[in-house]
Image 1 (cartoon, rainbow, N blue to C red):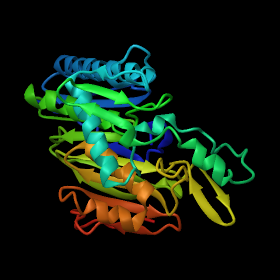
Image 2: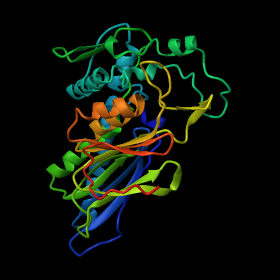
Image 3: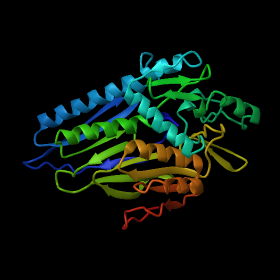
Image 4: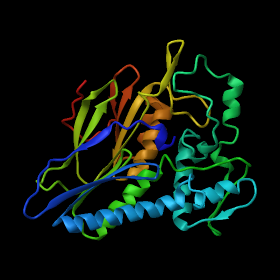
Length: 333
């Protein structure tokens, strides 16, 4: 569920072009436990660098609120008090938790921010020689369950009913941060940029040469090749995938992305790329579709008219949602 359990198949293609009116600046840094690539178009390099600094400050602020690996964050306080007492959190954290639980309800627990308490019984480092027992799998998710997250909107508190429960925003946090930063840049009048948080991208505007940002989708079976190059304007795109980390038992491929409702790995899909206006929602959808599989995943996506997807099945087939809006798209396998 978390970003560290996802393989990223996306990258963006930028022309090295600078006009007398605009300059493009890019910076890479480590935030929220992963890599952020920040690209800003501005009238001069000083302004561009100042805007990148502002983005990094905002991501750091969000990280200090929601990162479950930072012991003094609000989310860590919630986890430390599981089974003990409700914890008052900022409205921002409360509403992010509300939206995550909505995904859980739509997927019957296939998406669940309490996945953080899951026992790591599946090994994808080559050491597994047999599947875990059904009893071990069932036990691994004993402390997982979004229905045991109690929200009080009046007091703005979060309470985890069971001792040992944990919540984590690895499957939404980077997308949420990139969206927030894009909103800040748009409010400042910054005309173009890309914020890429470990493969969760929020884009707006155009490159200095007037062309759209181009997003390349890597073929998971041939990483040196692209499935497609897709132009974006003010959009978001995220990918969830598992082609590097999986095990095979009795001819069936089990991915490292685990269904938190069952404890069993996802099967059937090796990557899902979702496009839409919002990276937080796109990330929740890409993770959910990987867990649900092709048929149930496409039914879920139908509830989100502004979002579309490309899926790659375990046997190498490309599946597009009906509303995929790039008419000239052609898979390059």
